[in-house]
Figure (cartoon, rainbow, N blue to C red):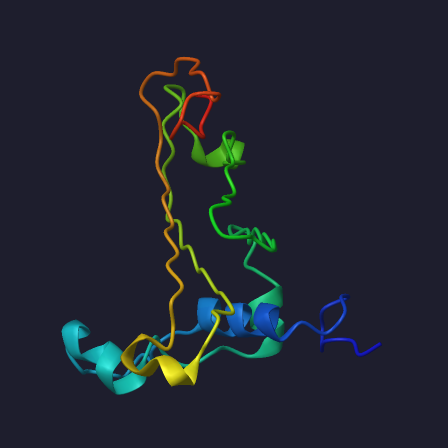
Amino acid sequence: MIRAFRINENFDPTLLKALSIHSAKYPTDFTVPINERINQMGFGIPTAADEIIFNDSHEITLILQENLEKGEFIEILEFPFPESLVDDNDLFYGEIEITLISQPILIKKQGAEYCQSNLDVKFGTYEKTKTRDTNKPNISNEY
C-alpha cells in the first residue's frame, strides 16, 4: 500500500491532480492580462503540499470522490455553509471555488474525438422548493 505524502489515504493520482489544480495560483508579480493567463500558464503554479492540505482558519476544503457511471450524478441538497458566513436572512457571503477532475476514456483511434466525456457542474440555490415526482422521465431532483 502506497501512502500519498501528507494525506492519510491510499495513493490516488486523481486526488493529487485535483489538489494540485485546485491550489494553483499565479505569481503575485505575473502581469499578463487575465484573458491571456490560461494560454501562458494554465491555472497557475500549485502551492506547497502543506499549504494545499492545511487551509487558513477562514477556509474549508470539501472533497467528494465518487465513481460515476454514464448518466449518474451527485447532488447535495443541503450544502454545509459555515454559520459564520450566513447572515440573519440566510444569505451566504463568501467565495466558493469548485474544481472538477475526471479520468476520461481516451481512444486515440477516434482522431479529433479521442475524448468523449462530458461533465457538467452546477452550483446554485433555490428561491422556493417544491416536491417533484422523481418517477417521471427526466426528473432526477426531488425538489
